[in-house]
Image 1 (cartoon, rainbow, N blue to C red):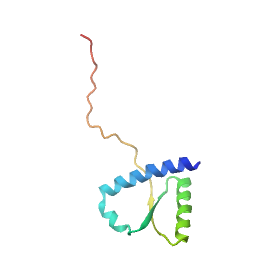
Image 2 (cartoon, helix red, strand yellow):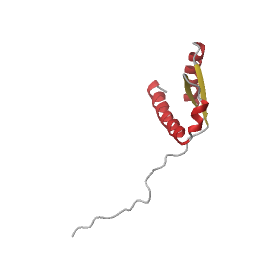
Image 3 (cartoon, one colour):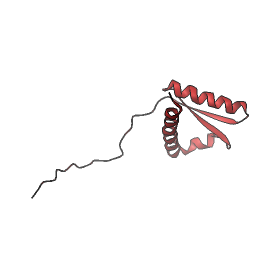
Image 4 (cartoon, rainbow, N blue to C red):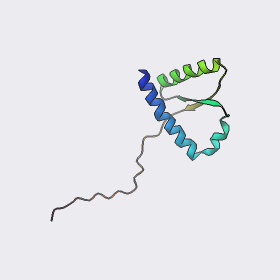
Length: 91
């Protein structure tokens, strides 16, 4: 896959992880200051390997890395609650 496709997948995954952190703020305390979070999606081998490869380069430079292994994403859901569908009628 092209870099652009991997970047897009990481962007989506990052947004989802941010949402998760908002719902589970206790997780933030487990991430050391000045560390880099690397998301490893177990459901997407190509992205997993690409992210791991980038992380290994950073580790070799002495950076602190925190791996977050993600088993899967839930299906996208709408946040709309009980919409009413109305047919507009002419007078």
